[in-house]
Image (tube, rainbow, N blue to C red; front, side, top):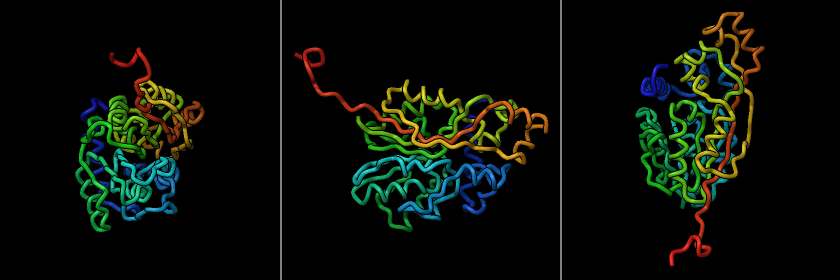
Length: 281
């Protein structure tokens, strides 16, 4: 992958194709990447179907966790979903926030926005809104969200630090996020790191787990907690598209791990005037 814009263009093209498919069509995919087998889909995705607010038409099977299950959404909250796709997490968030709350989904793929809006309109979800935009520069004012959620999206974004800064900006003081994402422990083989299909498949765009957590801390978030973690095993039929048999064996013996993690963190609450050092005379 040569530069950030090429990565974005590739991801947008791939997810525009996925937006025209249904979940069954994506079950032969790794986050929708046509190179991957059903096994990857089954390992990466979690089952949403038992959660209140679930709508099968909005579930394309592209996630790697259940961030809305851990997001501690309350009635009346304003929730922002980053990389909202066909609307799956938004509709579950709507169930939690209720009629008095608001849910804003952001996605930079026009075909996904169109599909999500249709899904919301046919269900009469008037407090769910979908905005086209880049999550590195969100089309949202500062300090508006009580909760931010995202499911297997930041690994697709070249500038993850910019996204963390934007999450901090749009959260209200005292607000929090719950984000599911793919991270690494150890190094991927160069052939996988450089593969566009594996980037769109949520693997080669992942960064080291500790770097990911440090990025959250360094942007001012507190109470950073890994809520859930599971290992992702890429099957041999996928690896064989990029690696020789000997390289696959070496990769498996290298100790490198690919993980889905769901992370919680808070934006510190605003401090009140507490004494002569922080108050004006």
